[in-house]
Length: 482
Image (cartoon, rainbow, N blue to C red; front, side, top):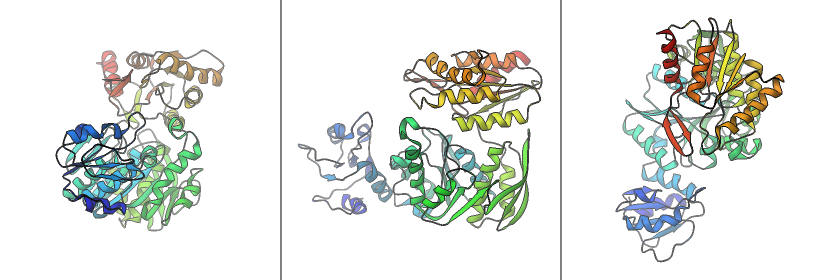
């Protein structure tokens, strides 16, 4: 593709045109024929690596400032990060225009909601690609995800692969980081979904208002319709941000798509789905009030897309669960062990309330909080665990560069604030903490291991080592009950 064709997307021209065979933003990936986009980052500035990209064969640069003494055409742009998505879309033939792209944003519930949407669409006969926290699925190929929403150029490449594989839908999680860092620029969204907004990522966004504004950016890109949780305190405000018509869903407030007669049990959830397209009784094989909301969001999307009510019901009832989302670990023990990704105050509150409702005995909770992230939520999560759990075991959860014991101490302050006692356990070693929880459980109890869910690593001092809560729970259970 000619450089001039690419920069037309930016409304600019070049003095010297060249053939572009690839676009890169990492100088190590440059090769003969590459356009290198110099993106300023938080730790490194791509401009500092432009010379290395040219040495590797880059034939053009996209920069925010001219770089002297580099003998290749330089396209100067105001925002290289935004330009990366736009030229990436052009390079890959604007794949989002050939798909129906559904983006799901919100603090909690994004992953499960995308899986539910995909299940319904597949039941209705569609070929669906998936991009999210757990995996990226293109055709019959699945690969583990490094981040919830890939970098803009990688995102365009993935969407192009979906087009090649014959997908007609792409369902993707859209993180607030991705929206703020313009990773979704250049994507034509058919539908945008807002699940909820609770405390998270304040290390990045600084204030709840900034966090809200980042989420709202999705609804500026939606061309078809929006789907919004009207029960969430920010739901109506989010709906007002949408340029497209909005379908509301909820349980408490009046909404177009609504759940009534909700019954939440240990092995599943049932409710009556009321919609402008009719009413159906659903029996979901997943439990929890939060899954009522996730399924309502998925139903609203698919009904808005013209999928039949019967296919919506069948698709939701067919989904047995999502990895690491209230996932039951069972080797025949006389108590429940559940692994969940809950790593925010609201997420922990939701899963603990669900565990409490289905438990005849005690609720034992194992959890921690990530290092180098929002510290303010640590004591809040400690309070929640103390109020809703009977035995609280505080441990590490990706401490990164921080001291795990100091993170645990900040969580423990919240436990003491809620109970006024020292009746909790601190065990920074997560493997040992899981074994303590399993060993302490009695018949009829529930052990909730929260925070990591599907993640299969621990990150300590910049090093990631393999660690999977589900594997560790099974090992601990088999040691006791094999």
